Image 1 (cartoon, rainbow, N blue to C red):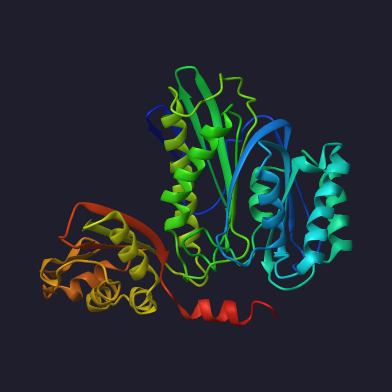
Image 2: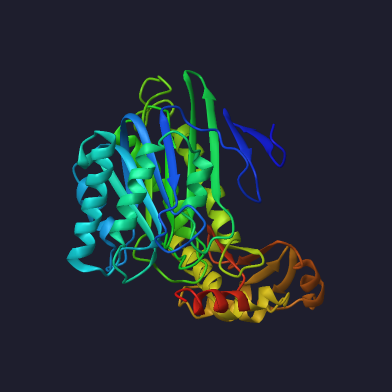
Length: 417
């Protein structure tokens, strides 16, 4: 087993988990990869990537709910409204191709056309994704040159290389994989993602590309993806900002040779929970790598009156600059947490609320327990868990976030310079 990994077995799945970055990923069969340095914004690093299935792959995707959508999102949504299969996804970092008008749409179309031509496949079987600066036209000469390099070198790169090529302000590449071995099903699921800023519910500036060699029928693939994203990426926030380019794709090419997994079929739950687990790991990576962040912040709300109340409360606390800066300063300021929850308008009684920070109860029945200094010491870890018990019902929710530091200001103040 590679250094830095630990193997986890659970309900017929095998997980290779690596916390600090990417060493090696279990790559699904039937997929080829390439990366190249096009010089779109960055120099001295790869900034374009190509993921290609050797055969038709069932595909599904989810996109940003921002009313301002990037050209690649508009194009992909239109194609996937009717298409159920795809062969390739081309990705660039450094330029979002957003707020670029008709020119941006033409550029996105041309990118797909050039990839299709190089791979000798149909243009409609190519999807495109971009991330980076908003409002700047794509430098198409560099992009087209990059596409030629991607096509010429297809199969010479790894999925780990793809994870590095799609980074913007990320400090480490994000990739994970799972292996399912249960009954007649034996296959792999792998994914790469990028994201460190403009991360808010509904995925924001987050790109994620999931591939599997399992055969999965379209309805099952779509349902599993929607459920996994709803429980992971849509409960992830760094700064509360929603991007124009959020996209999560999944491709299933059936190279594992299994009988297709169907919606509600024997192995649907196994596939769905494995996909959720994979997305959950990537969500933690993204939150941990929030721009300027020094620690992962996990907000857990318990005993809310409704599921919506639990989600609203958790997201409110996770997005609070006052809470996030207190976490950075190792300040167990539970009053900020209480005030944040109270501002949501959800139904609960202050006298029934208790709050724990890394297991130390700092508030009980709405009042101090006098253990703030103990909790402050307990906060000096890479993960801080805030548990809020509302005492109002039976619903709970969990949100990933991070602390807020001077580094966030520096990164975003200098992003375009």
